[in-house]
Image (cartoon, rainbow, N blue to C red):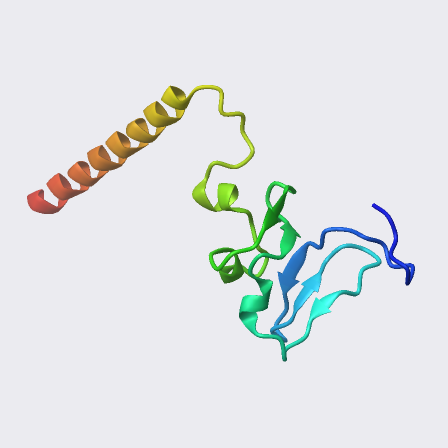
Amino acid sequence: MGRTRTGARRHTHRYYKLEDGLWHCSLPDCTHYMPLNMPSNVMIGKASICWDCGQEFRMGEGNLEYNRPICFNCISGLKQRKIEDIDDILNERIREAKLKKQQEEREKRLNESV
């Protein structure tokens, strides 16, 4: 990471939103923030560091719902795991859906018996 002409350190910000409604960078020695007079959609497309996995990502509307934005992989539950075989992922999702359905059926039977 280099420096700009003004001497500021060039880096990707790790944004978070405070109670004041401003988006600030949480990295040490960075005083960057987005002023309130900027429209909220100005944050869309900005690079940020994910609060969960630490990877850089571009912010979208879905990320702005979080005060500490996380990337789309973390939002969808994929996180930073190696995808070695798509079949493994599909089988895991199917297994989760079956378990959820079994749980719902158990709860339904319990409610019917009461």
